[in-house]
Image (cartoon, rainbow, N blue to C red; front, side, top):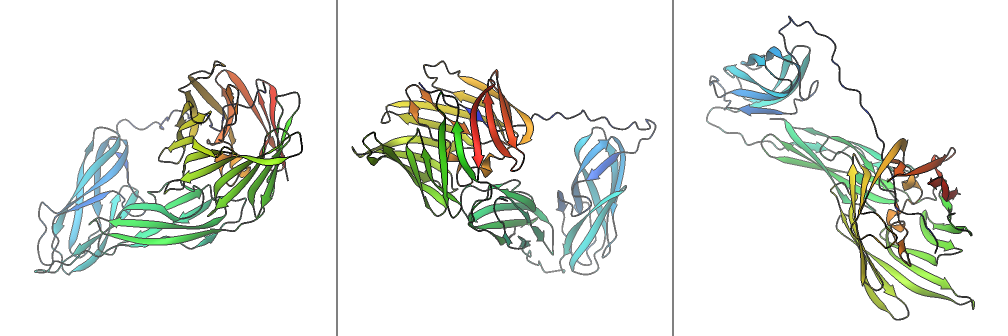
Amino acid sequence: MRWSFAFFMFLFVSSCQKPFNPDPVDSTDSTAVFTLIGSPNTCSRIVLSGIYKTNKSLDSLNKITIDVDVSKTGNWTASANSVNGILFSGSGSFNTAGNQKIILQGSGTPVKSGANSFIINAGSNHCSFNLNVDSIGASSPNIAPKANAGVDQVVVLPVNTATLAGSGEDTDGFITTYLWREITGSGIPVIENPTRAGTVINNLIAGNYKFELTVTDNAGATGKDTVSIIVPETILAGTLAVQQELDATDPINDSMNYNSGKLTKIKSNYHQERFINYSNNRISTIEYWYHDPNGDFYKTLIHTFVYDVNGHVTQIYETQIPINTTFLHEEFTYNSDSTLYERKTHFLGGRLLRDNIFLYTNGNLTTFINRTPDNMGAPDTMYITYDSRINTFNNIYPQYYLLDLQSDYYGSFSSEMFYFSKNYPATFGISPVSVSINSATQKPSEIKFNDILILRYVYN
């Protein structure tokens, strides 16, 4: 039986943070140290209370509540600059550090209607907010905010990330939330921080993308804008040419063929020849062709991919030829950040099932749970640790990682490769894993498992 490369989960870095040791402070100083959330720009967490009308004096209901981050307890004071006859100020004390709220009481009488911009000052930090004053007898409608998703971009592979610089503007209030989402695109791009004005898009492949930014103001009104990202189809420099499996007497050589930057054929001296077909820049089918000893070359299997609305593969169906029977071969469910959570694999025409669960820490796969261990004694749960190097396996197979998630069932063993995580593995269970990096391409060149050379990668 051929022993194949199994259960490599890529990749996680164990980072150690030093405990926070604040500088010594004068214990006799009772002045608090805190930061306004949003400083030094727009106050990002603030609530306005009360009604503001011209020639109407402010009362106890006119106040603002703002979140602050307290690093030293003690007494505090804060105030906003006087604008249009309106003044906000407050004082108090913090008994505990961390996230707290302060209230500034309003006073004065607004002189004229319209938008007013205030700056809250607290010690050496400040942030700004807007307040709209209505005319007496009239209640002006809320003005919807405006979103700006930034300029359109072109990203040239092998670069597969883009930085989005969004913003929002509200003339009669302030922006409370930002939300990015993908409208159109290819593959499964990942939005790092979808609730921030500025964010990074990862895992881009060739295709045209459109992302939408929605901003919401303090009255619940929204504004939207879109930005386009174009990733031209190019032949990637340093694409994978050959993957060698070296865990047997005769090495397995899988040679890769590309067309317009897409991996379209894998030719092997051991495995069946695979032809990869695409639709809308996503893998639609993979055909398996066999060379028999008589020199005949014929199709044996077809794997058909099914996607959800987010571009995730949810099922792979297997059609067996020539008997022409089709059954559900694999099922996938995902976490909210697009990492794989559960994978079910059906063997022998759907009669046997293997069910695996994947758990992550900070985006790195750290726990593999095999709910149906095979007769080789595979453990129910395995833990993975990592070194500090950044994973670049996504540049080896840029079209779709599920090419490497497919399992060929050899007797009682399933060969699986996972490139989900950010960093390279150091151990899988109690077994050491060693990944050598090609200095020219910064991609993996060799992988050892238990000090045995398992895989070698050769690049164009």
